Length: 562
Image 1 (cartoon, rainbow, N blue to C red):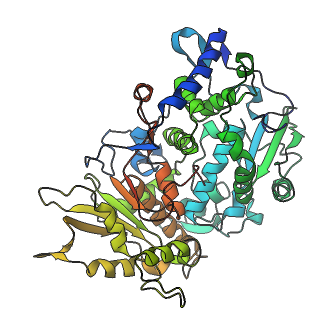
Image 2 (tube, rainbow, N blue to C red):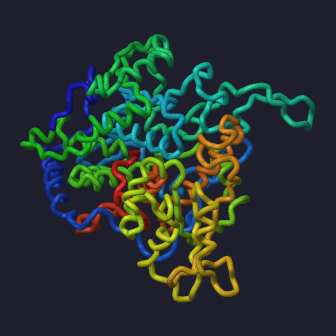
Image 3 (cartoon, one colour):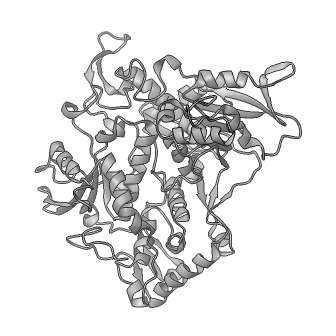
């Protein structure tokens, strides 16, 4: 499949930085693409070791990062443990095997690096929940890396921001401009800190390997409203291919080729345009065709490099045929590259929340269950709820009545049925994250208890000790709900509690949830790890998955960020 004109580099195609010393390398790529197709017929993912070994805190010591006068613990800055992130991936060019190939990270590391950009305007998606916004950010990164574009995040100025605190994620102390009225007193707030990150950037620390450290293009001729108008013009119902705008930068005279998109455009164009090209693995007609920059083989190879792959991993990626394996391998790349790190003030406040307010021990193995109810029961999840009760013969087709309008907590516990019970009778520590804690607690209270210890719940041969999020229920559970959703401090409190829950869920030994929820899909993205390449060559599965149980609904979430 030939990509449409203008999909990648349009006006000045960059000279390829991937140089092959002999045509034999190109032939090796073709052979790899064929051989891996034959090898990987053993299913989607392998589960990591079933032994209970994963605690919240990384077993490897990591250096704290300086932030002002304090130090930030990296265990609270990402959904992956620090040892699972390789920060060195994009630092230097390296030499390939035997000195026969030089490679960089899939794009020209010179003045042309900023010539092609995906300008991401997240405000149009800012009224969605955490999971939706973070997944959308990942999807934008998929498009940017696939099309060889710098991903530049553009937030609105204060005068155009939907939120008085300039961010949907509330205001930490740094968001305020303060003055000291008297020595030793409490600083007085006098307004917003104009230099403090706004919008999504208040939550996420956008990595330099994605932005290529490029500034917003053409600032002399295009302001935020101009770019936002161009974003809205990318309407897939009217324009099936995203439109690129070319403008000239006054500071250096270089032209920038820019595609402006927000959350809706990212989802629409991914599903209706980019996805089919990402999945295309049609073999080249000849060795000469394989060496062309437009060949799917070479495009997938360089796409993988831009996601942080080593050359041998990029070849493996190009040889994958099954769409689930392609998405999972891409997810593993993105996680290892540290695509989703939170700002230092988020890490600071999440650490305080987890260590001082939760009852979860951080140095012992634990499991996690995510029970999403709320508004999902009236929309996306309703069909699955009806299906669940219908299979039990407890749904009345005529009246639509059923015992509960949700799937009960005992069904989530049934995911442990095939998990080996602890021979010593030790309880399983389980963290429960839910937007319906009162009802879930009632369901747990109705279960049998260990004699002499009412804190231990018995279910079949298992004993469970449940730990709930300590978040104050009256504040609401979602970033866009609650009686004080406009109050920036309470909005920030909900923000910190949500990110803490996401971190705890993702780093659990075993996770039980479902992919109808954005949270479930996001959690899975960061529980995947690439298998050792040598093992893959011997027939092992390409992706390892930290243990997960899907309580109901679809068994695979689809692409990362979807």
